[in-house]
Length: 249
Image (cartoon, rainbow, N blue to C red; front, side, top):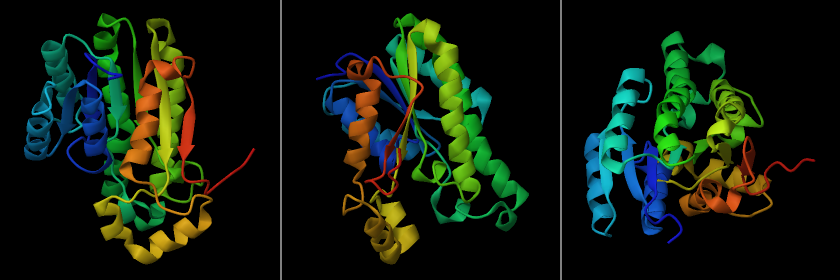
């Protein structure tokens, strides 16, 4: 159990990729804080994780609200005695935000960046002291394939996440905190399939070198690697996990 006794926060942990990340960290022995605006979903998952013998803490949190983030992280610090890993997973995505700026309302754009960019910043700032208590830590930010082939507002928001990761890697290096990013390609979650449809999945898979969409566990493998001591010499980097859809040197 690679993360036995570790304290992990996953934002947007109730459903989708976040749910898988929580389950995988718990399976490796971590105590997991499930942060989500859907507190009922977070409670349901936390109860399931607790059945496996780990401490699981559901915390209601809108990461676009800086005060709420501060309170949530303080709660985790009190419960867990510090923080080892933060996974900044919560975000606005899907077809609604994968549009040109000219197709979105000002409110849509503000919401997109409030969550995807400022939420990542708020959470990263809030965990610093808790990670110091543990002698360092790891932050893993979730970006997107769209951050490498930027065509719309969503892609810009995730490109900004990549930049924030590099900046925090420099800022936090003296505290022994590593900061890296994962850019997933198309992932076969229920919400993605419902939103984009099978034709879109077939087209994207046809552009990949690996001839199937990623499963949530495929992305979790990368996240757990970057959160673990196995990646102790890696910081400030983005790992593009998109099945070879874009290969360049």
